[in-house]
Image (cartoon, rainbow, N blue to C red; front, side, top):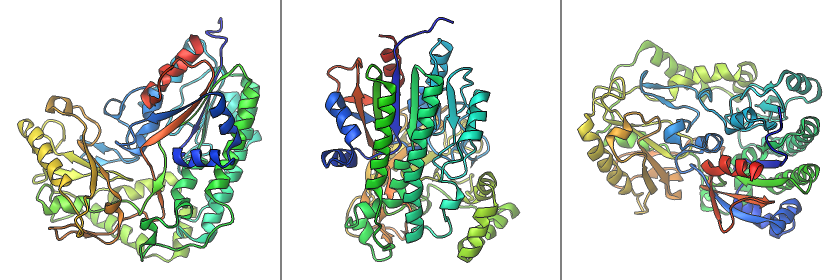
Amino acid sequence: MKPATTKKVLAIGLDSAEPGLVQKLIDQGSMPALARLRDEGKWLRVVSSADIGGGSVWATMMTGDNPGKHGFYTGWPWDAKSMSVSRATPDKLVPFWRDLAQSGVRVGVLDVPYSPLAGLSDGFEIIGWGPRGVEAKIVAGPARIEDFLAKEFPPHPYYKEYLDPANPGHTRMLERIVEASIKGATARGDLAEALIKDSDPQFALVVFHETHFGGHHLWHLWEPDHPLFLQAEFPKPEPLSTGLREIYQEVDRQIGRLVDAAGQNTSVIIFSLHGMQPSGGVAAMLGPFLCEKGYAHLANRKSSAQRAADVFGLAKRVAPRSVKRLYYRLIPGSTAMVLARPNVLPAYDWRKTRAFALPTEQHGWIRVNLQGREAEGIVPREEYEPLCLEIEEVVRSMTNDAGQPLARNVIRSVARVEEAMSLPTPDLIINWQDAALFSPLRIRGSSVESRTVGQKFTGQHSLDGFGILRGPWSIDGCETVFAKDLPELFRKALTD
């Protein structure tokens, strides 16, 4: 087949790299490779679907669609047919590089989060080598790449020997995270360079996860004086000799070597789809609040399966750390997810529930129990829009005891019930203020008192990302690019 293009593009994603931190480190001389690219090219703001959910941003980038269409927004999406949640899979996502490959462009892709295999017959694609989670399955193609990976490159050091899920926030675990992140970034650079030299792709996309994983666990050490980290019940770990700065520096070194290997005539983009900021954990008051207001009702009687799940969940919470360590060491990740599923969503009485909170990793998510969409829906279609407006007003009025608003923004996924009938995402999305992330939280005028969960994650996703371009990119005059438009930007760089 005649090559579709003689031009080359190198795209390097820095998962959840915070634009403000990158700018600061560049200005301090700590990221010389990015400084050189910025000086030779252009800095951009990148806007994604992070306000809908952090789990959606890579699916938005790889498909060129918004979450309302591609449907991927979280690790535990709602299934209206079964009235439950299940572990997300990317099987229905179609990445843009599949079309590139079918048009004759040789493609190489390394570790794009939540990506399915595109079935490349040339080039390379690897998923899960250095994953967001610690137990993703490593898959690769074509067959020779799978063999090469198995023989030449061991798994990323994020795997179990470096992590201790039973003892989060402990100084030694944080040291292991830094160590694994720095070693992993170096190994990722080695792997990416070897793959690029071997396959010579015309379009290469390499994603560094180390900025993401490090940011979630180490942000309290970067901004130790942030009010969220000064709470009385918040852990106070000892300072570390190395941390986020060193992780970002190592990623910068690897970017420099990959850009140099690609050559001066290759168009380069370094980007993040969203950033990172301080977190006090995940707000947990929305479900109980909706119950108190009468929108949702818990089931009075639980099934035997749910009672067993409750016992299992309690056992995990009260088990000694030694038992937890053994559990996480022996139980495969896929099995752990199956065991966790019954405890992810409360047992609701669907005959009385009009709207309910979905499990979330950051934002507040509300789903309407809509007739004709949910299998047990009770809200008539004509009541959908008034109900959404009513709940939006109630949520916007939520404050803590000091009168500080809890909601920064409330997003309606769709405006009309006709659009809602096929909506895979939540109907309302709440972006919380920092005031919602303090523990304990008391809501003014409510009996609900809650504490955040997942406090081991001291960094949460901020909404904006960034891009640095070098080369003849066709966006003169633009200062902002949308994640869903990146596929078209890549195509133009290869063909214009």
